[in-house]
Structure formats: C-alpha cells, structure tokens
Image (cartoon, rainbow, N blue to C red):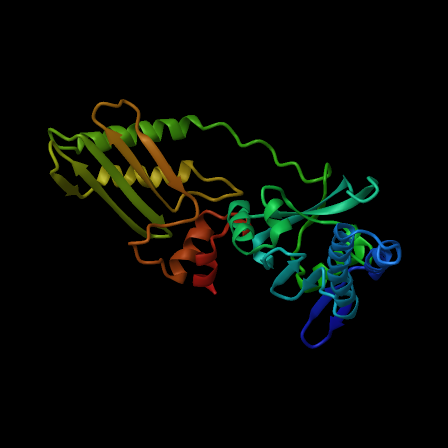
Length: 323
C-alpha cells in the first residue's frame, strides 16, 4: 500500500509472493529444455520445440520480473473515485453502495467476504467496461464489479475504511441485513379519479378529425409550462393551449402523485390515439424537457419545500441550481 498525504491518493499493490512463485516456475521452464534436450543430442524437431518453449517462458520471466520491479496497483483511491484492476475509473457519485457478502474464490475454492460495487447506472458502467476495460474486465462486464481479498495485500475491512476516508458518504451494507423499504403503496383512488378527469377534459379540447394527440407539461415550484400537439387527418398538425380545467387537474395530479421518498413528478406527457380507449401516461420525477428553460434556484427551493424528497432523489441539475 502507498498513501500520498497531500494528494490524498491511496494505492494497494498485489502481494509479491504469487509473482515470485510464478517467476521461479518460468525460470525453471526456461532452463529445463536446455538441460534435457540440448545436452542429449536430440533431433532437430525436438530442439526446435525446446527452443520455442525456452522463448515462451523467457517472455514470462521478463513479465514477472517487471511485475516485481515496477508493479501496477490493484486498487487506487482518491477524492474523485477509484480505479480497480483493469476496469475504467469509477467516480464516487456513480456508486450507490458497497454490498458485503460471502463469495467463493477461484484460488483454492475457499469462501471469503467480498465487496460488490452496486452502480447507480449499471448499463452505463458496463458500456464503459466494454469500451475501456482490459480483456478480463470485458469478459466480466455482464457481472457486478467485485473487490476480492485475493487481489489485495491487506484485509478487506482496512480497504473499506480507506474508501470511507476518501468518500465519507459511502454506504456499506451487509447482504441480508440491508434496510428493507416497505412496498410501494397501491395507486390511490384519488389518482385514478384525477387521471380519468384529466383525460376527459383533455379529450374535450381536441378538434374534430383528430388522430393522435399529446399533452405535455412541466411544473417545478410555481413555474409551469404545458401544451397540446394534435395530429389531424392526413399530415396536418396543430398546437392548442390547454384550458383552465386541464391546468387545474394537472396541479391536482402533482399532489396525488406525491411520495415522501421520491417526491412528485416534474414533467410528463399524456398520449391519446383516436382508435385506442386507454391513454398513456409518462411522468418523470427527475427530468424536464430539454427545450424548456431550467427553473431558477427559487423555484427549485419552492418545489422541495412543497414536495420534500430523499436527498439522493434530488436531481443533480436541481442541486447545481440551488447551490
């Protein structure tokens, strides 16, 4: 392990015992053909095979010697994140938590505690592994990123403490002892009633001959935007301004969708097709459309004051706006 105070970088290097053993084996396999083959007057094919074997393990000797003289760290920690054994750099804000569990190691088959890195966006991380990781990491891309003790020179608990020093907000849980959140409550009758009334009011606004229509909306604090796009017979389209009834029902929908953990929606859309009875609702609790201006800090504060939510459910753009 190497710890640089001012730069706040902690590095862990693999144990040299395995590398030394591999070096001894490669040296033996490099020298053995010279003793067995070249000293006994073997035929040219055997000599060629022996020469190839010596060359192959000679490369192994060079690789093992380099690993001993100039080893590469298995794990590097800093204030921004960590880099682990052939994987792309992981920022702390990408990590949802570390889940400790018991796993069986490949070497010896014994069971050890390992740390599973649970990503907030696992698909994005897998894509980066495929693009930037080494060959072994790419093969393991479909699986979770595991920090295993066999690649570390110190106990796993010591590594976890170092990770907490670099990122005090790191969440570490034991598999099986993780906090159990109650199941999401069933949809309230109020929400069903509001959605039904909203679809009815939305439909009443549509002109004769409409084929497809979308009601889009966004409401953060007191700043709201909404519009209706209508496709008529043929390729004609039209834009309609929602009436007061629709806007009132949208405000009511925001209230009945509120959850203490995730807050309520910030934007959404309702799609209707003339030949389909059921409307399609799409609500976003974290994003607003790209074409709308980003709400200012006061509106973000009003939103969180009216509809508080868990800290990790606050969108990053809203955090930046408030700060």
